[in-house]
Image (cartoon, rainbow, N blue to C red; front, top):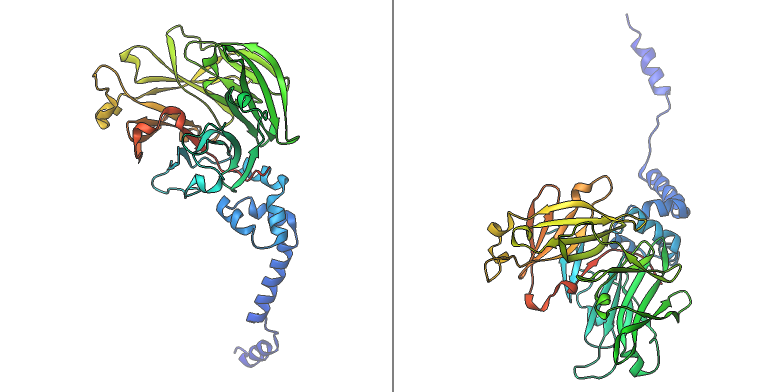
Length: 399
């Protein structure tokens, strides 16, 4: 017979383990206090949050604001998140790349952050924008230049290269150089013509956010003036590519102008895109023949500047049926522009895509699975030329 009375007595004498709501709150408070008192733990948590949360949490306390604004954190955050590029700017229009889960525009009106009208984005470089203002219409004043972080809304006015209005009107190129690891203090590269009657004689000046001063880098050099129509920063240098002339780059550490090799194809005549993504320099060129206009080679440059190689071959044969507007009005060529190339992460190269403009339509084309999607329709499409588009990259960088 089982002694149930003995078991019952033993059970009554067994101490019970239970937690009240007050105990739970106490332990939660202790855990929260432990996390809140450890900058290392906070940092590891913050590194995993979206940039919108980081910006919001800056207002929680002075301590959090200092922690989230420190260069050690902002650099780690940008590198860990691969400086995400959720969309691009077309003049004052924001175009999100993901139409199914569109990102929030970083601003409603770019002009609201500037003290002068007619704001124009000159260049985008790893999250920072080089912008210019031109004053009221009809104004003869030289443009002012600014560096603007659209993520944090930080703005800095670049001092003029010279007090003389006549000198400032000789500027032929202004370009931004910035990267979270190899150029943490942004630089602005200015190329100006030296002689009004000689458009092929130039001078290079450099502005550094570290010294906050301009300095003359190269006193004089000579090249055809159309070389400096578009500049791209990559691998410690500013690069220029044109259709009919040699490719050039200006290495910032040695302050020397050098020549970049051409792609190894005698049939390549025209470039249609030149830019950087994911730490790689890209060039898209097409062959001047109607049968090849829908076949694009995406070239990538070796880091030692030795040569280009074909990274992707983009075949757009399916586009004319889906978008008849791509066929030119004359019927024997195709009317579109490549406005961006966005590389996927190292392990997810299948995310790489090309962004095209076909009249008023913006098309996203995946280079791996050949899929494409209409992601945006532009207002006043004739106002947008290929240099009107600038990639938006999230960065917490401060200057």
